[in-house]
Image 1 (tube, rainbow, N blue to C red):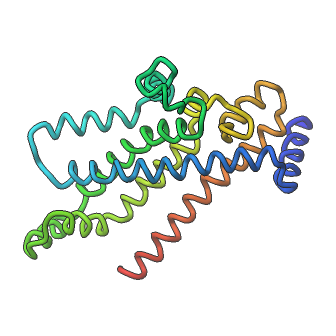
Image 2 (image 1 turned 180 degrees about the vertical axis):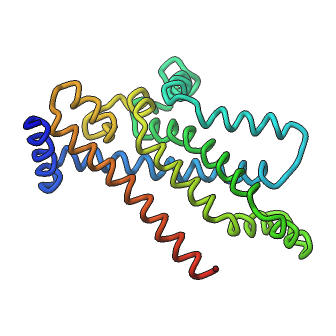
Image 3 (image 1 turned 135 degrees about the horizontal axis):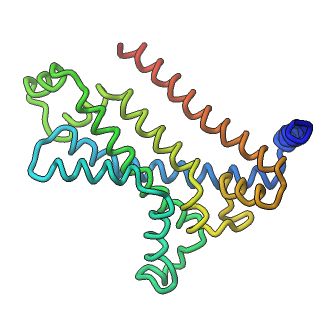
Length: 234
């Protein structure tokens, strides 16, 4: 118990002192995760809309595929991207391996299916009245999709937040594609894994506390935004 208490005390001290090592890991994590969430949402939202609002041949297979991708292990995604961007891969000449860009690509592939699947689910749970109203008013195309996305804003917002949580908390993609390079591709999660292996538990705990704080802040911000939106439009 004294060991754990001392580790937590040292972790808090490092956080309060704004330790450069800790701050850099946080900066890289947030940069990669936010960009991956944005790119993943740009890919996932249209797919979710297409699956949630339309009926077409092969839709069931597409839904199963998206759901399967949501549960794909991060190391598998990392291996897939690695095979494309490594020196012998088709994108090897671009020099993406062991860069923040590689992490963003991998995390984007993790985020997109989550946003697509949860957006589809949110749209399918809309009341029949909302769907009937858009049809009655003759709203179609992108305008219809935007209108219904606004109606399902709680679900789509939760999809994006969940995607961000998946990106910021994963370690497989960041380790395989980023290489855990100090002050370049070392994220919070890869730093935690490294410091734990080294036995520097106080530093690992400090990073863990920050990771929890980031996740809590993202969810709190979403809840506040959702409450304000409901007050404004509800």
